[in-house]
Length: 130
Image (tube, rainbow, N blue to C red; front, side):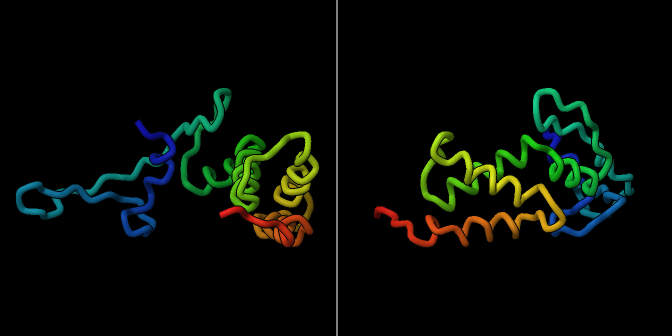
């Protein structure tokens, strides 16, 4: 039904980590039993993604190492930060720099990618139409 959601099943509605899920009596609201949380999922991040994740940690690591997911993130951040869609011929170098700062080298991170965008000349001097 929701493979991406199943991978996060170890977290309750308040974001607390749990290994057991209480089952409540619908009439009294009392806990009847507890069952082990099954957070295994095959998220199918891409159509050819055969990896099955067993917990939210490996799920997030899988997201972080996926070229497709990182490329998508870079494109969407570009669109958000520039207030326009990318043009592959005009913006290709900038997208490549963003991707490099996100995934390559010892300082690669989201923070590094955001800095690469906000420190660029065209970001600092851009104008946005109302």
